[in-house]
Image 1 (cartoon, one colour):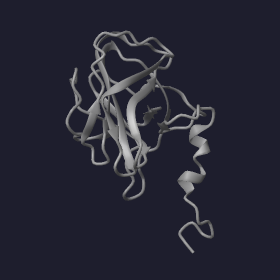
Image 2 (image 1 turned 90 degrees about the vertical axis):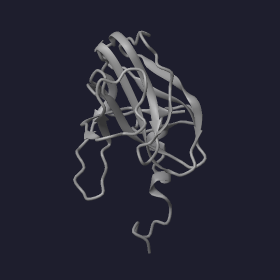
Image 3 (image 1 turned 135 degrees about the vertical axis):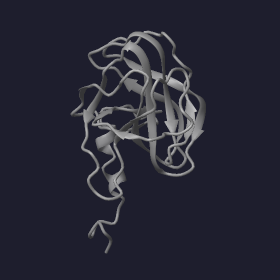
Image 4 (image 1 turned 120 degrees about the horizontal axis):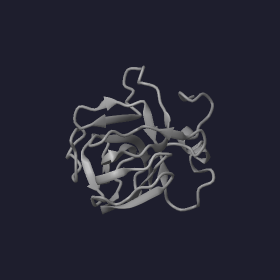
Length: 185
């Protein structure tokens, strides 16, 4: 008998269809299912937002994707995505997208500077920073603050006055209720 009662499989694998429903049969990992999502204010200018993203050993992550909600970025000066390991250390960042427009309701898939082969399954962090006059809202959901000992944040903010470069580590993370949809491919 296991902690899962008589069930001997891996619950995360058995429930995988919830995370891939309606998505193509190509490699991707997403932190949220495609249902129940809304327009969330997950960003503040120059402050990095990072969301938990489960990655499996052997995955090759080349791109990160975020989707803007109903509000577009206005006068962006810098924006990028980054991937952090399970301990909060930077693995790779995309090129800074500088003043590239980001319209409302638009998918942005950006390549990491260096593709990352995952060597250990676990919760990684998909991060986004937008420095702009108005930051875009993102497609996502609202999550609860950790309540049990050992639980981590589903989403957090860190840093301030960030521009073109992702910090080397996620330092002094602060709980963020709004959790953006993050997709690794």
